[in-house]
Image (tube, rainbow over all chains, first blue to last red; front, top):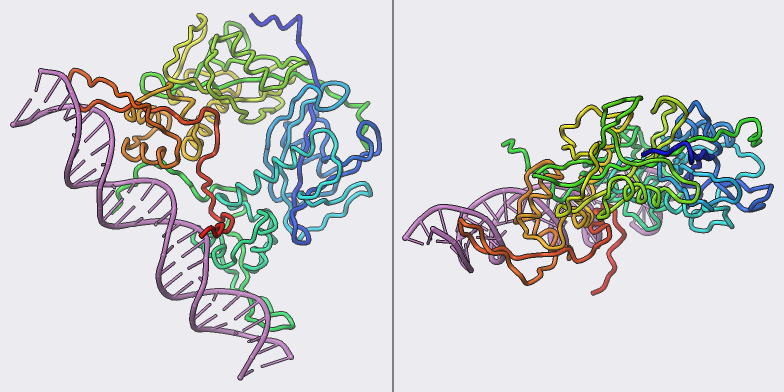
Length: 234
Length: 234
DNA sequence: CCAAAAGTGTTACGGCTACACCCATGT
DNA sequence: ACATGGGTGTAGCCGTAACACTTTTGG
């Protein structure tokens, strides 16, 4: 029976976020450099202790606001709990890890110790933060395929080729603009604003501007093999 | 700056599992009935406090072993953190929730207070445990489509119609045996053992026995729209 | 008129559903 | 023979990838 009196451990709980943004054609993550031991000079994820009066979602949003002035988080979601007893030196600390996404038209002012780093070329990271970044990247890549999560990487309006570059950078491989437009349009995610851009100095047809129909993530492709029998509506 | 000295809250951390099994044609979850306040007589998920020397995965496996004699967990995975400050009365308690799966040929002996309940017809549940059960059910349903997770619901060998009933119960809708066999075979998940069953008293062709090729979950259907360009191998 | 960039039309293909049909057994 | 349950063949559909082609601009 619950003999909780003999052993009722209390422990620290921190929240950490891998905040991702496509910058200069590559997927980057926000890291700050530690100024103290342990792991001095290594780069780590923003976050901090969970307070007693907030849940983990509120906590990570608060900490990101306080510490790194990122108010433009278009999307935040839980990744997983990281709880190895020795994941950080010293007293036990369990971490709830999050994925955060910033649209590419934002360029938040950062504190001195904070910088964006390409997820494919990370500096020396602290603790288990590299694993968290990898998880965040993989989660984003999956969700780009079967959800509308692209809205969280894109500006309010954009051309298809701009969107293609965002997707290519995030996915790590070339995406065809032709098919990207068709896939997203057929699913009803993309709608034309009616406006067009002026072509650059080298000419070319002016590009139509689009926006995402919904902000707020939703699964758009059931990708369900073994799906329920089709409703006979004919 | 991290003014952690003034506020360094320590809190309780529990691990909880929604252990699912297909029993009597329906998807069921293991619950025990509370004998004490708070929420006396309500039904709750097995689990308990996280110890200082273990991570959450080890903890949930240990607790399931100790408390409910389920040694046949074919699959365990993290679901999410539940952390609302008032999710349980009294001192702050954060929960890491898990999904557990038991193959249908096991019938573990249960303590007096513990019973299986259909996920579609739950009794009065304690705290936020109903939400956790829903999450577990939804996760299972998704993964049945694009992973080999069926192995964790099925006995070591089985007929296609037995498998069909497991899938139907878990998914909540009728699945065609014909297509189930083909989908799983094409993906290389299913292999024939060579044996057959004897038909029942009413006759019929004897069914071939199959097994899952791999135990251990893996994503089998990339379901990736926007997938990387095909490798030109011809 | 040509180059550049955007967007459309068309074909091919893979993977799935649906359903008709064939197979093997008990009575 | 025939009922019962298991398994296969095949046609059609849906959605995407690939690529040729058309459209619209600047020089």
